Image (tube, rainbow, N blue to C red; front, top):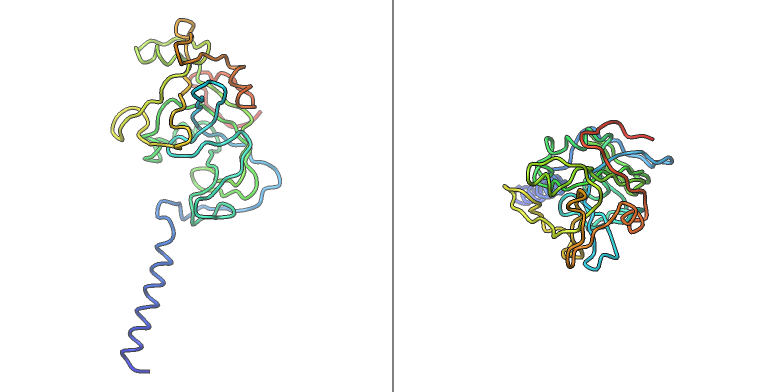
Length: 240
């Protein structure tokens, strides 16, 4: 074979190999993956946001950053078309082994450090194809069995006061920058006009024009799962 032709073939093979390696997302952990189909659900915990529709008749859960809204019982959808979570993609429902790890996530991941602090705890059951890695799990299916709302009043905390919450109020979503407070991520366009739910004490737990106030039972009915108060500072292993 002519040397020039051989050189061209070698270059083509090298380019194809580099593309194959480059197709793997560089932010996805390379080590510690364990993959398998789970017959029994895995109990895990995560942080999320609760959003309320403009008319107050619907509530939904969304990821901490730019994640799409998801139902209490849902199967992950991959924009790349993966049938289930794979090590070479980012699709799937993310969760941690314990609440200690979920609260420590901002120290492990830059995106979590910039996420809005108005988050709630979700106790979830993961099933289907589940990937396990150093920071937790990534699963094909997720069922939210309990939503835990922080029990401290957010408006009081903004003023440096610590007070017990009694209910929930809806307010506009906090928009911030990557370097300041609030969530800098645009998020799911389908819920862009939806409000955020915040814990409120008796003095702040009241409806304002266009912004309803809810009890925990109201939110539980809208979401279709159990909703409880989460005591501040509570952290431990997942389990019931």
